[in-house]
Length: 160
Image 1 (cartoon, one colour):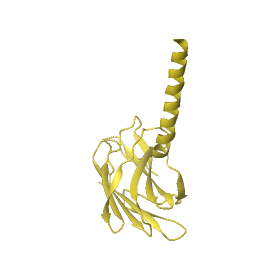
Image 2: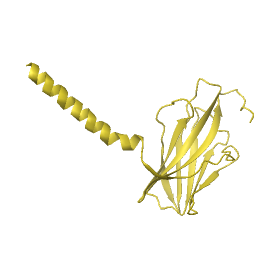
Image 3: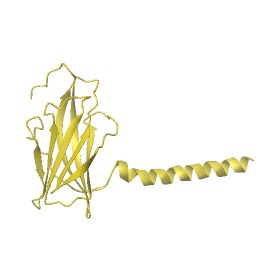
Image 4: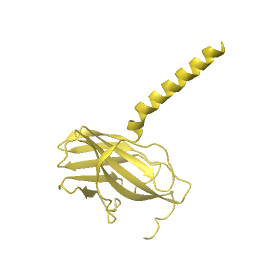
């Protein structure tokens, strides 16, 4: 009976390992090219464009421009010089794990992708975020990072 439990435990660990191996690329895809972060980008002022050395680019925008937390947001991505099989936006808190938040965007034609999502509220009054636009291409995943700040309702945006 003890051998049966050992075999069951080994099978369970093997199945868990295989599942983790299959899921890891979905949670943390391998990026073959990443654009430089534009420190002058202000998504509250409007969409920003991130360029690659070959001239291709990714433009990203969020509506409403105030980027409120716990409110439905609209995301728009416009690709220049990139053919995509799919586009997602991976939202990560800077300096604080805010969980998995990666909406898939729908193709609208001519390199345009749109979708909806929401930014969670943080315990801090203001929270810095990175929205990494992930573009799935035949050559692999290319990415462009965009940073922005959210504030709790009733709070002021911190001065730069």
